[in-house]
Image (cartoon, rainbow, N blue to C red; front, side, top):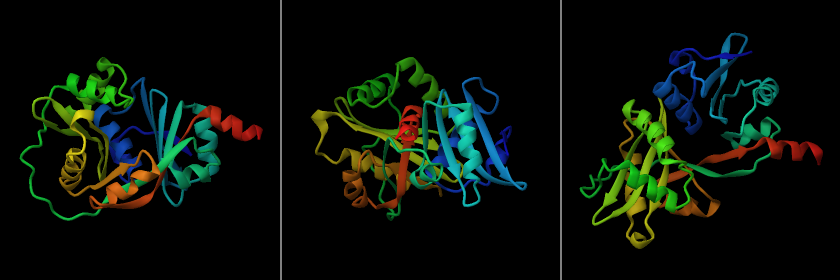
Length: 252
């Protein structure tokens, strides 16, 4: 059975993975009963087995070994979504086609010394411009500032930058959840590439995770060796699907 989630305590069963990080970070920042954001929990014989969030059509699933995938598949099709993000194995268990995906990695590196050049405060408009120039899907500045600002205020997101004469590079803890966090939005200005800024920022954010498991989604399979050199190891694959892809799969 899937029911609306009304409290963050109802999500305590979720594991330390990047999908749980996204769901619990969103709940901590916005709470329940928002017109643009909903949360559901699946229970099987009274035991919570999966959680779902949907933010403006972007759905995230976090499943456990006890998930009822058939019920979950019918549910997500019924409530609808524009994109659906999940562990690749879980998406396959739902019988949904993968339209995008790659490796996810988790930090296993050792201690690193503080980096005095890294800044943790900077103008959000300049960061947004850098992300857009790199074709990161940041949306309009107004939407970006409202969302990131809300999560920064509630401690469920943070960022770090290199900025010398200009903004050279940025990286985010996109979602800081209860047991895990998800890194991303790692961008370097073309004029500043080749100086190791991206790896230094990611290492800094992963190392200072305050006991949480630090995950990152590779944009493509070829980036796995880059992150392994920084102390990350493969933790499976993330995957995304869209309703149009699901319909194509049914028609084949």
